[in-house]
Image (cartoon, rainbow, N blue to C red):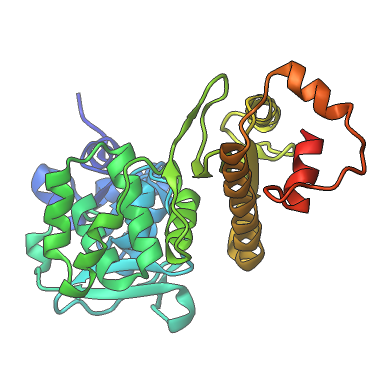
Length: 338
């Protein structure tokens, strides 16, 4: 039984060069027949692929290299921050780089591609390879991205790919010296890059953050900033208009917030838009809620709950009774409220 050329291309990673197909017994006539059937297509000169190939892979091969950086991590199924620029690694001496959207056009500055030349020769790269390893992608990110994006990517890898501490240490040892001090900031408990950003930004403001606290009846929340104050970072699936593939969480979130309130807690819930476009106000709200929580805890320590009989006796006291020397007017008002 003759194996069609598209089956061979698909079995070998989805991309093959003409010079790799000819030794396998396929001729130019077979390639033209595959093109006529639309079972394969020409990515760039001398390169062929199948219609089911990932679009990101097609763009990288068309340019003349392999995906790296954030774009590479996205193809591994990781939810990392989106970037406007796609990073592509090309071998030394690479030329005639093409536009990612048109194999006939040369690569232009406005194509949204950032090219990185590496020491590897093209012959050293496995045929059909269109992305670098996760390790290589992280090293590139640490060297080229901001602290926040780099730590968010490392935390996503540590959590969802279950990396060991030793493997993450090896990545940082291969990164530039200036970023090795970021290693303690990586946290495998971060559920999303939004949580990582909030954790880092609150740390910059000297506000402690506890990741993934457990609340009785409500389960795990994103973070905790005070004894009774919690923070949730909501993606698109938390919106009532969500129509994506993930589970719809809007109703469940409100049920959990109610449970936290019954237990005496308070949930601050923010969207990604608020984090990116209105962080100063978000920080002000978290700071105020935390200060109020700590002040309330301090007052309860100074004035623990009395037996119910004493509470009733206090309520029968005249409402305009002046505070004692031990109690300030503000504390008296607080006790009357209780």
